[in-house]
Length: 218
Length: 218
DNA sequence: TACACATTTTGAACGTGTTCAAGAATCAGT
DNA sequence: ACTGATTCTTGAACACGTTCAAAATGTGTA
Image (cartoon, rainbow over all chains, first blue to last red; front, side, top):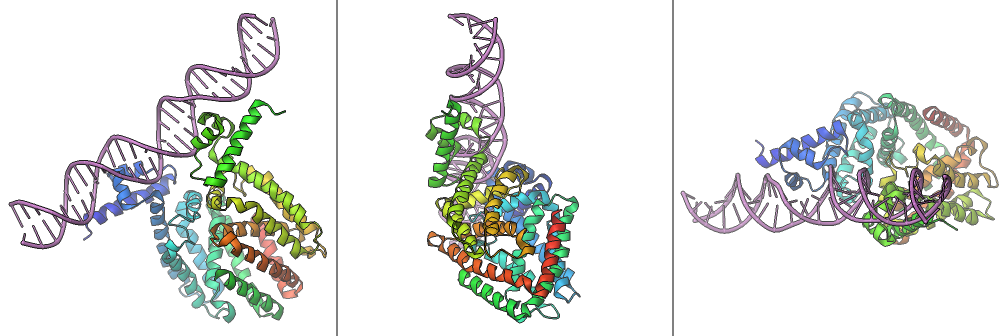
């Protein structure tokens, strides 16, 4: 059984996540979390060094849930387009309860100093986990993706997913259906776009793009 | 001559921008701004409803400066690639003094509620001004850009510019030279990519992409 | 000049995230 | 069971962004 310490930590996290969902980021104060969990403010800080770390807790949970659902949703689907669509919709499903929270989450996440920042070194593990979801979608596809791009695609799709999340945050339509339509419309186009990679002229430009990306990254 | 009121407002803004540049966003407290300007905290709030509005002041100034410099830098350059490169580098030049400030600026700007948010309705004017810079770069180019894309290019480039700004924020290299190299490397590729639009297969996919963009926007 | 009204300025006060010295509870080794 | 060290918990305190009633100053009118 869990130690007392682990119980307290979990309790604080649970209360915080529930409040984030129901009240949003700003109305969820550290004092309210502490009171809701029946502990002192200082005690909450003993387990989470900042409010941002509680946001990270949410991020990790959402991501873990995404991994599970993406796995289920892609089961039995073999074409890349279908698999990608399933993964993206699974992501939107998991994020849905947090839509009003999204803006503050992204504002937090985008700071280089934030533990949640997806590009920062601190969250390499989290980013890898998220990338793995897209890698699985690509690697498991039949027919396989163009060889030249296969290694780069997961990262590209992940980046696209970040963009979709940003779009989703600003999407005020009912149930964020515009984002859903964007996914449904864009994914087949991406799949078709990939087939263009075989055209010699396109292929050459693509090589240079990939080369540039590598040189900038290193 | 300016009224006393205008002088005070300008003084507060000047002190704030100077502090933003020299100390960054967090260390520039409203109390410090007020003290530096020789007014009370409440008085600063009489002219600027929030700290964010002072950030907006900075945003407007940077943008105005960008417009001027882009104009100068593209003068006499006719090819699209050269013009785009000049505009982007002009943007980086203007932003340079604020690099350490960049992260907080973007975190502020990305909130839908922020007056600085580039997508929000409140800053339509500011966005239009920024878009106009890219429109001028496209419209003034010789040979002209592909007709099919000409109307969409400014918005696309502007979006790319937002992406570059994001990259720049995270760029810890000396003088952000990686961002400079990214611009130098990416711009010619974009120009070459545009010429692919004439290939029938590519053109068809492109039409669908543009159609999707329009349907989502509306 | 004297008065009424509008504009500008003040500084104390509020609620926030966060820190920290101090104390309470728990544990490990004898 | 005792003791010393470690882990956990507390709540007052700090600096921050922001608000607001009240005061001070400015402006136009009789």
